[in-house]
Image (tube, rainbow over all chains, first blue to last red; front, side, top):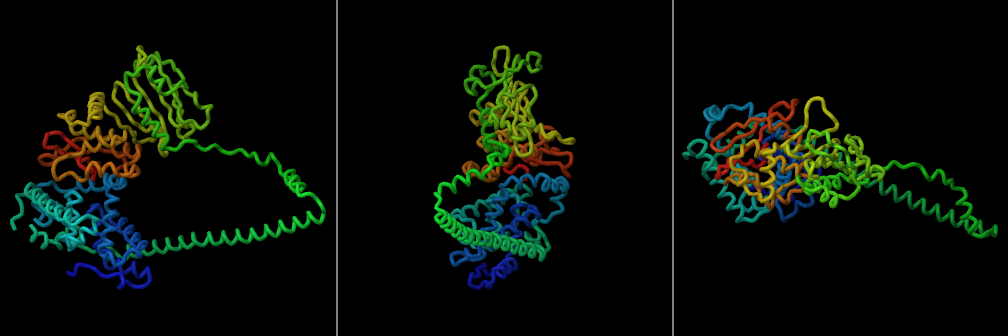
Length: 183
Length: 369
């Protein structure tokens, strides 16, 4: 996959067309990214709407210094982080996430039924946000380390060490949950 | 690990959802929203233009009117002062003095600041004289000799009153409606022992659409919604006397040694109390410091805006009945408190806890995630 940098000049001319283009190109992955922060599809939908409206209001900022993909991810990440820190988020989770938990299978049943990669996906979503996001961006959204640094407004070395710690953290969790990964 | 993660991109996406999640309908909704906002902006841009055009036309008309009048005055050979007199006489002084409804003088922020000042500065065992030195002489003394609380008298203050006539409008009954309307910002009662020392305090004030009461004394401390009353849920949070002792010690030095052997539900309650008291330093210290579970630093925590921290009523509603919850261990050093915040809720609530390496139970970051 080409690590996604379409220059702004290739944008359609009308602003609404530009927004349509952004949504066609990134809507699906941005909403999925939002879910990895909120773990709730309704909230992910609300945030995705905010992200694209914000992108529309800042179309002029999509200039040479930043690629479109990095820029939209940066808006998305900031919106998601604002949201998970907000009161509204924690309040909503009260009646939502926990509802899922109380209806889910017991850990034993869950372990038996789930495949290893599903188990790892679950563990990734349980990582603290700062580790979760670098793993998702690097391995699943196929960002380069430099692009992650730009999207997170962080420096390259921080991203490198955070990615290293994230993997270490994930390994520890995997060991605890079921004897680690053999592969 | 690298290889495995690189290979599982699709598995991860499928784990999130196997189907497409961003629908055409959502796209249309965003486009509509953007179009609506653009139309609103245009409208906002249009009105200033209309207003400036009207202003310009009015200005021209005024100039023409003045010029004509001046010419007229000159023609009739009258001094300009007469015009002034005429104008004054035409005015009806009675019309000018329409009664204006008095708005609350004090903002909710000023009210809350006063509440926290009282909460932090009037402490148990303080002498009556010290209280009066700190809060002033505008208080009412209320006989309290038959009280079950053990106090022989109480004194009451009204703070931040919109009308000074309300300053000493204090009785046994809490002036709930005046507080609700912000005519009285804070109503504060102090119960005194036969040694004339503070035995208990009660602070009544409004926040949003509710009137709240914060009280503390020998029996611990309580924060509850007293108005408007609801038929179903009682919104109330209390620390037991034992928890209050631990809480006070913990607030003094923020040292976890006071939390040793304290059960997880009580720890969660200290966390809620710290949130209610806006003691964010204590609240942060109650988060786990187990490696791999820390989600943000103390400095980051301090930078969170107040607007993201939640109101008192939100805190009370969210953690309502947590003290009646049951702790369910989950894994080697985890667990959660299952409780019923509201009878109307679809499901029970959960509050995550983690036992740190030192064996002390702490609160997980974002405990209700």
